[in-house]
Length: 120
Image 1 (tube, rainbow, N blue to C red):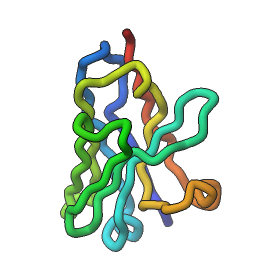
Image 2: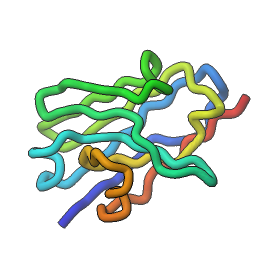
Image 3: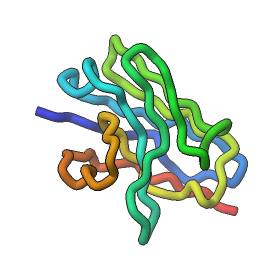
């Protein structure tokens, strides 16, 4: 059974910060690189950041230097610290195992996501 619960979203002014959390079931968290994704209104879901089981990270160019992904392996939780937020960061944010091809997104279970809204 896959369990993904995102939290921590909200409304923030441009330049502000938010910290997202994702509680994942052990069967998906413990063996996988984990990722954060986002979907803005009218747009395709897109990759934001990933973290391997050993802690290596990678980011989309649009968030590099502003967002930081981390994971707590003891509690099956992955985080996304978002600083210097911009209006274009407004989206529903989701976590999941890292999925290389966006065409495979539809084949995977997703949680409900957490809404992030950045006002200008």
